[in-house]
Image (cartoon, rainbow, N blue to C red):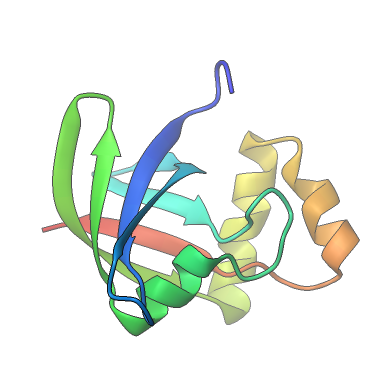
Length: 111
């Protein structure tokens, strides 16, 4: 994923209680991190269901590791963020086209 900004997101499994870490593409905005809930175009990745159950997460960006709170943004606000995200990540429009549905956006706020 050369040249694409990726962070590691750790969530707690909603069923297992185990910690799960996944790489996700992000954009940093005013000290927060915006991620799309697309898992390479797949709808509703497990990490999204985990943050909906427990929004407390851990984020690793480069050498930084910190606690954060995840906020799922959908509806009109989520669609607006998705449109911005598509401009930054040219492969994302095909994801929405293939699904025909909105992908919720997630804001990670360091605590």
